[in-house]
Every structure is written in structure tokens, then in C-alpha cells.
Length: 193
Image 1 (tube, rainbow, N blue to C red):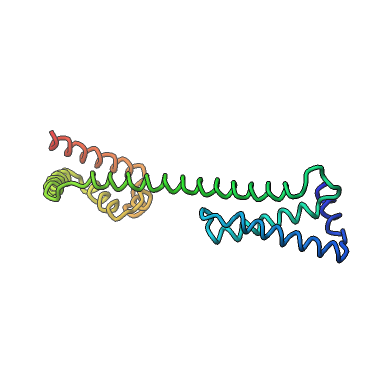
Image 2 (cartoon, helix red, strand yellow):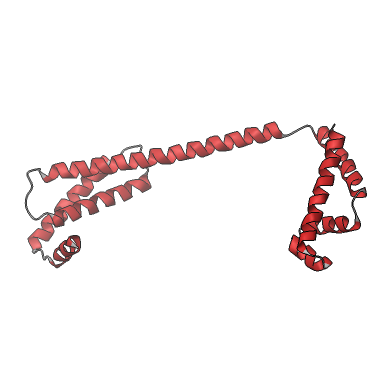
């Protein structure tokens, strides 16, 4: 509440022409100092303009808020504000770099894992043929209801939709799915051993 009252007081505060000219001169001086300070090679040019603007705005707010002279010269406050902006920028830049490095590292691991994971095409064909043979054997053991439920599941139907279409209770569909899984697992285990 007190800040709002202070802000209203500042907005209602009027300045003479000399004070405005003096403030403009100070702000131009601050801008020049900030431009020199942020002319660092490590600061990107687009960020540089933002940092200068932030510094000028912060110091302008400080100049407007200052009611009584402080023991510390305003020069120190200018230098401290510029220094803090520079440090904040470097912290943000380092944090972004750290996040990017983590991401690059994770992508590198995923790529190596994918490369490691790939198998010989001949092994893939042999395994697929073997699985197809096992699947054919398992299909031969299915009842007509289990076979129809498998067809619907292959078409990505939900159990409730299958039950409605086949005009059977949903519980029977779930039990049928359970039995089909059990038969497929048994067929796989028999052929793996």
C-alpha cells in the first residue's frame, strides 16, 4: 500500500525545465557509460540494447525516487547497477548454456543407444518369420469369439465397443482378451525354449 502511495506521489511530482534538462543529460551520460560497459565481446548485440535500456530505466526510477541526497555518490550507484546487469546477463547465459549442454548430451546418448540397438537385418527377418509362425500356431488354438475379439482389437477398438458390437457383456470381452494373451504367451514360451 505504501509503494502505491509513493508511486502516486512520484507521478504527481512536477519538475522544472532545468531539472528535466539536467535529468536528460544524466540519462544520456548513463546511456553512454552503459554502452561502453556493455561493448563486451561476450554480450550479443541484441542483448546489449536490452541491457542498456534496462540500466537506463532502473537508474531513471532511482533518480525519480531519490528524495534526499545519500551519503553514497550517485556515480557508485550507476557503476553498481551496470555491474549487476552484466552479472545477471552472464548468469542467464551460463544457465542457458548448461541447459543446452544437458539437452545435447541427452540427444547424444539417445543417438548412441539407437545405433547400438539396431540389429543385423537378417536377424530381424529370421525373428519376424519365427514370430509369425508362433502367431499362426496360436491363432489356430483360438475359439471363434477369441478370434473375432482379436480382429477388433487389431482394428484398435475399445473393449466396450467390442462388447456392444458383439452383443455380449464387457466382462466377457475382458476375460476373452485375458485368455488370448495367456495363449499367445504360452505359445511364445514354448517356442523360445
